[in-house]
Length: 120
Length: 202
Image 1 (cartoon, rainbow over the protein chains, first blue to last red):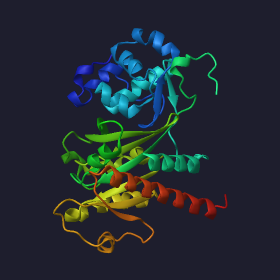
Image 2: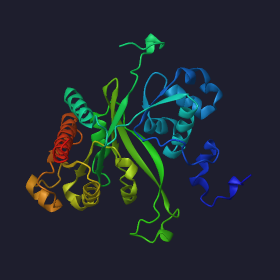
Image 3: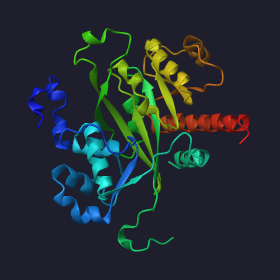
């Protein structure tokens, strides 16, 4: 077992205790990628620990981005990303894609955003 | 549309897309104000720890925290449709290190560089950054009360930006004005993409 108390970066990495020391998310999730709690997440997230339970409650019925999850749970972005990646892997959250520059439907997304902004 | 097996009281589209626009500019230039003017939520803040190793400007050993820095960014949200959400991310204003953060602009539809005419030089770095990353961007001069007013062409010259880059005057506090900045940006992004598609013959 490694000793967590010897890290010279101290408070800077302390939040990673909630991810059990892992800093590499198992999936690369964009800050604006949105997540929705799955049926399974609604049933089982309460057994996954306090932070994951809070995330499942947050994304239940309303899509929330990784950035929103981090802001509402007051966890650093990197910590949230690890937790969310875990939950996606465990089927508690469904990951919805963020638009990418190379997407074939890029033009369609731009046009939909444009008309949406005009309607505001 | 049907959602087999799903609870009809909570029908969500099967695939939701999200997109983002980056709002850049110097500290105190009004980025969060602009985001708040159009966002459907009060702007939120998220913090990220980022690596600054290899920044090159400073000796990294002299940077407190040895190569990592915490950046806070504010963001807002506009639900375009039930399957399309737009996020507006303000770049961290308190550190220049966000330029190392390619993740922030990856996949972004475009960026708006907010300019305060009293501190024009603050916008050089973001403009260079977006130019080098080939991200469609525009320059929006935030017209603060009492700030020196220059003609748009004078600002364009001071910033040395190409004629095809849109330059608009705005009041970040006004919803209609902030909206119009975003609309002009997305129109520019569409024109840029169209040009690119024509050039590559697609």
